[in-house]
Length: 258
Ligand SMILES: Nc1nc2c(ncn2[C@@H]2O[C@H](COP(=O)(O)OP(=O)(O)O)[C@@H](O)[C@H]2O)c(=O)[nH]1
Ligand SMILES: [Mg+2]
Image (cartoon, rainbow, N blue to C red; front, side, top):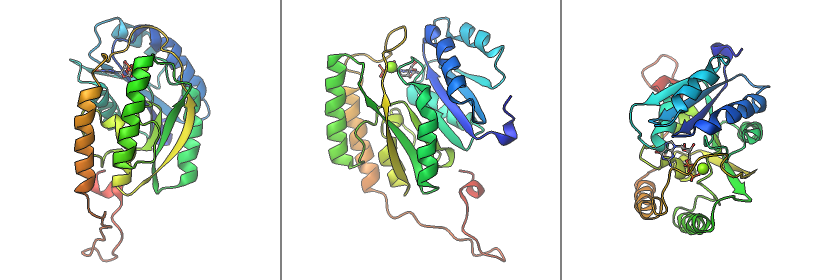
């Protein structure tokens, strides 16, 4: 069993009505992370199906599996945020709970972040061989194209749920609904770099998408305007050095509660 003090990685999985996808995905995560000290945090975002019961069942034999629950659905970004706030690892991996993201890519994303060093805040997965329908693919292509051009975030696919990032960097980001789709631009905004790795997309295991046809399109434009404004209003990130202590030292992220 993974000991909390040696714990390095927290895998956060947001789920809303994903009962049929939980047991197979937990098994895959366990296999993928076998060589790491890890915990898994499922965040049940107000599910109305058997998700809570299945999580109870799956948890019984897996002491490293933690479950958080929202009383009412608050959305995917809110679920990720609750998981990250509760996480004990300094590094977070996120993936969707419907089986579309293969946990086998977690170690390579983690290695990419490690290789890039402390200055890198995020390893972003980018989907190859997307398994979504034609309309969603078209929406996604337009959204990614417009976003890339306006935010210049050097990322082909920000919507991929597979990401590995430093917890203290995430905690600096402004929170809003849909934050998970703008992570690269916002990580750059904090002065950290982003690395990318291709990941293979899979079809949803069971169940249906939580997003309707137009959910992302219009609100996406509003979010894009908001993030554009945030970037415009950012000045250089200062490095704060404490001048009152006998031995002045750069203030570390942990010291300021990030
Ligand atoms: N869309 C959506 N997903 C949520 C919500 N809360 C949690 N999730 C989870 O976020 C992940 C991505 O959602 P999904 O429905 O697969 O979206 P899609 O793959 O983009 O169609 C899944 O694991 C969902 O169960 C929510 O309010 N809306
Ligand atoms: Mg999905």
